[in-house]
Length: 283
Ligand code: CAA
Image 1 (cartoon, protein in one colour):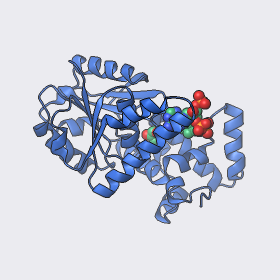
Image 2 (tube, protein in one colour):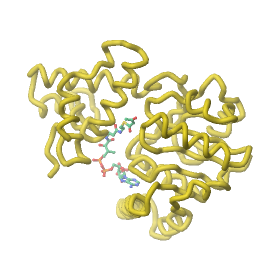
Image 3 (cartoon, protein in one colour):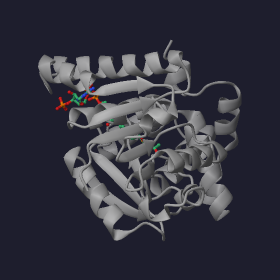
Image 4 (spheres, protein in one colour):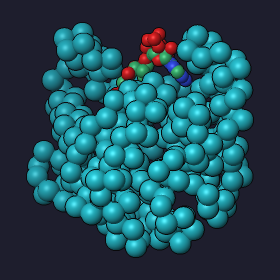
């Protein structure tokens, strides 16, 4: 199957990054947001990111212009009707995702593949909202999408070999390294990352060390690009809590139980970088 047009549902942090890397790889991209204001802000984020890529010498101005020219924004899901592959990157809400999957199942051509960028929700449940379970999989990107080299594929018991082969061709065309996991909460990366981040919050809450020392210890002792509390602020405390709760809900394992401080910080609106305050102050 020839992949020419890629649809992206959602133009937030992840959706805009996914739209950008797909357009950079030469695909025509149709990206859908629920309002003109959100769409404009998502497209601005893409323009800014391309500008940064030009400044850093990753691409030329001509390539940035061509990339932008390949991206069409819309607020109508119907405009995805010509897509060969769609990546859903809407908010992490299962009933919303199932609605989107069911609608797209009606709109998309029969050959089209439908993927979710969810970081923890059940792909099989999304597939159950469609009549094309063999063409459904998880394609999980990492933030920032243009920089992080990994894609995690999530294969359900319904996903066909043909769909996996096309997904691999797609991932390779984006110049990403690919790994494949079964459809279980957290897949590979978050299954390991979430207990580590939760433990970092616990260690901080217990007063073992300052937040700076916890981050410095991991950054320099383990050569990580960011310490865990900085990474929590980067990922979003609300996002981390959502993933942890989803994993705890499924496994009932204390390794995925959020420490009280994390839940209270989210309740207080301290979501990390995006809200201006998390473990550190960004205002
Ligand atoms: N397009 C292309 N390249 C870009 C770019 C863009 N828009 N923006 C930056 N880059 C490149 C830079 O040119 C630079 O490349 P070189 O190393 O070749 O010079 C590289 O990306 C790093 O950029 P910066 O120098 O601006 O930033 P940095 O060195 O401070 O790194 C970071 C920033 C990449 C975010 C780094 O701190 C990092 O890797 N942090 C960890 C991020 C992480 O763990 N992400 C995963 C989160 S978990 C997730 O996403 C999934 C989930 O389900 C929760």
